[in-house]
Amino acid sequence: MDMIREGLLTKEEALARVKPEHITGLLYPRIDEKYLREKGIKPLAKGLNASPGAATGRVVFDADTAVKWAEKGEKVILVREETKPDDVHGFYASQGILTSRGGMTSHASVVARAIGKPAVVGAEEVRIDYDRREFRVGNVAVREGDVITIDGFTGEVYLGEIPTAKTELPREFFDLLEMADEIRRLGVRANADTPEDARIAREFGAEGIGLLRTERMFRKPERLQIFQKVIMARDQRERREALRELIPHLKRDFLDIFRVMEGLKVTVRLFDPPLHEFLPNPEDLLEKICDARMKGDEEEVGRLEYVLKRVRELKEANPMMGHRGVRVGVTNPEIYEAQTRAIAEAYLELRKEGKDLHLQIMIPQVCDYREIEYVKKKAIEPVLKELGVNAAIGTMIEVVRACLTADKIAREADFFSFGTNDLTQGTFTFSRDDVENKFMADYLDKGILDFDVFQSLDFEGVGELMKIAVRKGKEANPNLEIGICGEHGGDPRSIEFCHLIGLDYVSASPYRVPVARLAAAHAVLREKGVEFPEY
Ligand code: PEP
Ligand code: MG
Image (cartoon, rainbow, N blue to C red; front, side):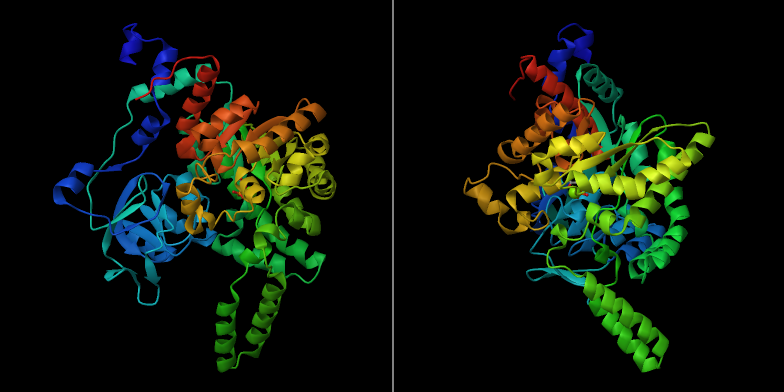
C-alpha cells in the first residue's frame, strides 16, 4: 500500500503481488517454526491440513466435555474419530479439532473452515479408545486432559504446547481488499448457517449468504426430539402436527441470521441429509431396550422397539445417493412446507422491524426439472402466496444429470448454485468422506491426479459439466443467476475458472471470503494480461 501511495506501483500491479496465501496467512495464528527447530521437536502424528491455524489445548473426546471444560476456562482440542452435526457445539467450545478419519470435505473439515477453527482430520495413526478416554499413536498414549497442539496449515499434531503467534490485521489489509472489490466482476458471498458465521462473513466483506444449510437447526437438543416425532409419525396428520411444533424454533433461527444479513441476499437451502441421520443408532437403542426390559417398563420397551423398527426401515446401503435432498421434499412435502413457513414468517418479522433482505430459497440434489416443479407447487409457492412473501426459488446443481438437463431445470429456477462437493463426488464416483484417506495420496504420488479434486476444481471433468450447465441454463433463462457454494468457491484457482465460465458469484466459508475477494480480482487481472510476478 505504501508503494501505491508513493507511485511506485499501480493498484493492479500491487494486487498482482499479493498471493492468496498472504491473505490466509494473516488470518490465522501460526506455529512458531523457530521454536520447533531450536528445540528439535518432531510431530507426534500427521493428518490432512483441513482448516488453517494452530491451536493448543487439553484433549477432550466429546463435544459435551468440550463445552463443560471450556465453561471452566480450559482451552480444549476436540478429538474424535469423525464428527457429526451433533458435535458442532463442541467445535465452538474448542480451540481446534483433530479427527482420525475423514477427508477435506468431511463434516469436521467443512464446519471447522466455516467457523475458522484450526483442524487436522484423517490422522489415521491416531487410535482413539473412547472407553479409556485416551488416544494412542504407536506406543505414546495421550489421555483426556493432556495438552496437544495441532497445526491446521501442515496437518501436524504435537505433544504439549507449541507457542503460536497471531497477527493483528493491519488497516492495509482492508484497504487492499477494497481495491480488489473495485476490480472484480464476481460477487462474493458466504456459506453461513449461524448468526456468528454470518457476522464474521459480513465483517470480511461477504455480500450475502450463498448457502445457509438448514439441517443443524433440526439437531439442537429440544428440536431433535420434535423432529424425531416428524420422522416417526404414522401418517401425514401426525407429521404435520409435529412440524407445527418445530416452526417457531426454526423461525427464531432464521430471524437471528436475517437480522445480521439485513439488506443482502440470503440463500436458504431446504433440508438436504437423509432422515435416518436424525435417529439414534441401532446399537444404542438395543442397549436402551435391554435396560427398559430389565426395569420392567413395558411401555418404554414398546416405544423404543417402534423407533428401532423405523431406524431399520430408513437404513440405506448408500445414504449419500439415497433418500435425501429434494427426494425427501417429494415424499414428504410437508417438511419443505414447514421450512418455507418458518423462513417466510421470519422474513415478515424482519420487515416489521423495518429491515429487509433478498430472500432466495434453494432446493438441493435436484436431478430433474419435475422435482422442482413438484415441490414448488406442493410445498413452497402456496406458503409464500398465503403469507404474501416474495422469494427467488432456485436449485443446487450438484447432480451430473442436472448439469446435462440444465435447460429444462433453468425454466423452473431463478438461480443455480453449483454444489461442487457432491458434483465432484458424482463425477468421479469418489466418496467425498473417504477418498483423501484411502487412495488420494497414491493418485497424487503416481501422477494420476495433479491435485485433490475436492479442494480445487477438476476443470476437465467437473468443469466441463459446469460449462454445459451454464450454457444451457443461460440459454433457457437469460435472467438466471449462477453461483457456486461447494468448497471450491473459496479456492483461488477454482474462483478464476468460475470467473472465466461466467458465473455471477462464488460463496465461500466466512474465513475464506477475503481470499475469494482477492482471487476474483486476480481473475480479472489475469484476463487483462496483467503480469503476475513469480516468487
Ligand atoms: C455441495 O455438495 O457442494 C454442497 C455445497 O452441499 P453439501 O456440502 O452440504 O452437500
Ligand atoms: Mg451437496
